[in-house]
Amino acid sequence: MASRDVGDSQYVLRRAGDASVLILTSLADGPKHGYALIQDIRAFSGVQLGPGTLYGALDRLERLGLIAELPSEDRRHPYRATAAGVTALRSHLDALERVSMTGRLRLGLGAV
Amino acid sequence: MRRSQESRIIAAVLRSYPARWRSRHGDEATVLASALLEDGTPWWSIAGSFLGGAAKERAFRKPSLRVGSALAAITVGIAWIPLALFESLTPASASSTTVTIIISQPGDSVRQLESAFAIHHFKIAVVERPVSTDVVGSILSVSTVGASSDNAGAISEILGQCNGGESGCVVGLVLPVHYSGSARVTVGAATTSNDAHHRYLAIEPRLQ
Image (cartoon, rainbow over all chains, first blue to last red; front, side):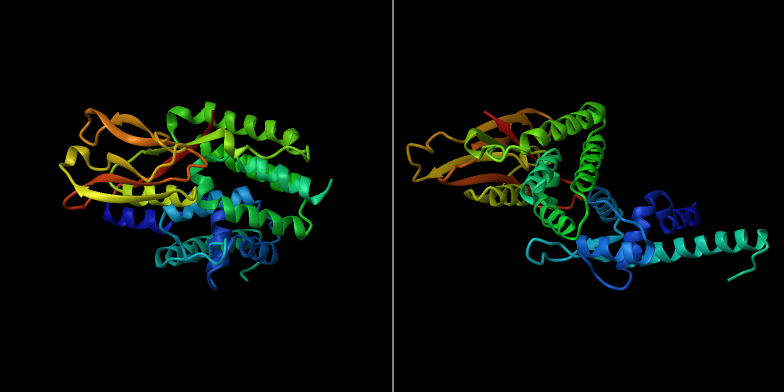
């Protein structure tokens, strides 16, 4: 059971949704506030995250302990990824990579 | 549509979020919406996203209120949009509202009350007094300091369940939104604190 618990916490992002993965990926290179997150996510993924979706995902990630709020800059709150968030993101990306590699091999595209 | 009208519509939609959410994200969400409008994001896209977020926020807040509350968020949001189009309309006239502050969980009441008072710019101090476990987190007394005739008796108490399950404890306050007096609220505190419940404060502005 212990190993399953570890697995569950590592793969928590599987249940947290795409917006959460995008946000954690954006925070992987440093803290950002809401508007910077939207801009960065649009730049690296082409996804335009709506502000309502953004705040819902930020609250969810914070409840899960994957991100933390930093002291406010004027009226904006920057967020940073916690150690648990970095671990969860790494596990999630590893899992995606395995899926991607399997899919490419089965399509005859070869590994990247 | 002018930028001011777009901003007004979005501000109206933000009012459909629960007070707890607004006190935490409201200011930042307003700034974010302005920045998005500036960079060309359509107002209806921003408003729609916030409206969906408000419905979800209410739907997942309390299981017993899920459907009704989420529908209420959507209804309130939609109802405010046409009203917000009128330039002359002042958003939710503060002079006609009261603020209801409810301590929904008992262990973190000092911080909760202080932040609620700060949000509304009330000059109300919160002090703790060690008490038995059953009244921890309850409001023990409210004393006004130099209350003017406008403010005398303006604070009313809400009775509810004590920490130990009995009824009759003061668990909230109702104040005029423009309360300008000074006051001191004494809250029951545990002699030792080792709980780790997730706590939040519900602040619901109500029309008089």
